[in-house]
Image (cartoon, rainbow, N blue to C red):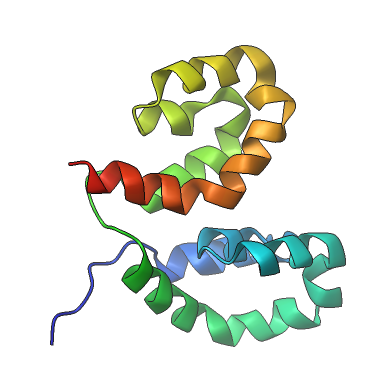
Length: 132
């Protein structure tokens, strides 16, 4: 049986789960709709957040099957987005120099670019990794 290459770590999922009541781990695993719901309801009033402790391994396996592995590391890019998104470092890492520099001088396009990247980062990385 051909196992998919790891793109998303269970450990990273649990680390982001700490901030999961705002949907961080759900965005990481490519679950944008529930990530937005978690963001606006504090993890479904903390109940969904607690239940996600059991669901993270399955979300990781699903993300591994769904996204294209390659030279650009998903975990590193998510860390860069989460902590330095306003500087565009994650975009520079992906080779998107123009928008990376634009994020630097506009604080992540006044935060709207960061929000867009939280919603689309996995797909962006899959596209970058597929180009190799």
